[in-house]
Length: 296
Image (tube, rainbow, N blue to C red; front, side, top):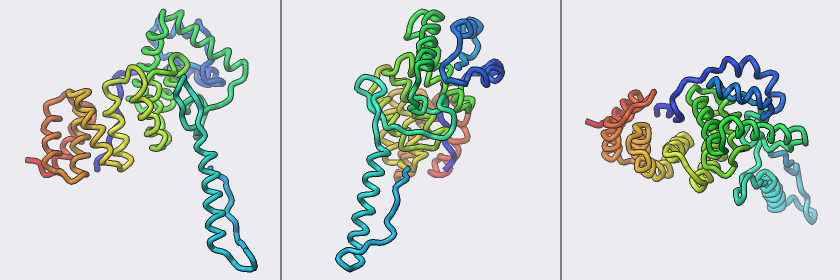
């Protein structure tokens, strides 16, 4: 199957200041001065901020006998306890619990800052960032919109580290918003190839306020990438209702239908895709699915 790109808002992003100031500003993820933030906004430049380890028993003697059953029982108990520990959840917003996970790389480039425990100075830096943003744009809603917009631009450019920083900033501004979890879902799949966490984030994003019209389209793509076409088709059927003019959603629905054994329905979705606005990879993907489904 032809690789399916992650969607985002197509726009260019000037990263000169980001690369110049990154070493200094990323000592802590969200820390930069209010003056720098405001200047960045007024100049329309990027807002730069800033296992399992369980052991297996090597042998077991029970009542004088080697007990395979006992060995399996201990192994299962070990796996259960390790799995329980790895499934620890954290409340990140009122009523929103997520699985605590960490990945390699700077905490500023991981969802939820890698769940790092922040000291007083770091918390003060977060507060300073939020205050500076509110002074710059006037409202928390506008600050959130500006920050997530830059996150999606970074996604479109393939800059996962920049995008993760933006969505972490958005999390500081409005942790209850759907866009936070949508963004982290894309980062989890795009950068860390963690489909399980991405799935969790997409599920939360669907329940939170103000979801983007592209949410189900992106979720459906992730499910296709994760080789879960039946679930993908259900989500993508909704995606084309949410955004009927989004060609990628129709194309991916065609792929899902084809993988689920319905070539005729796949061709019907492909025909709808032809009528809609194209994206960067739309023509290549559409040609491939039409060829695979042997559409006329």
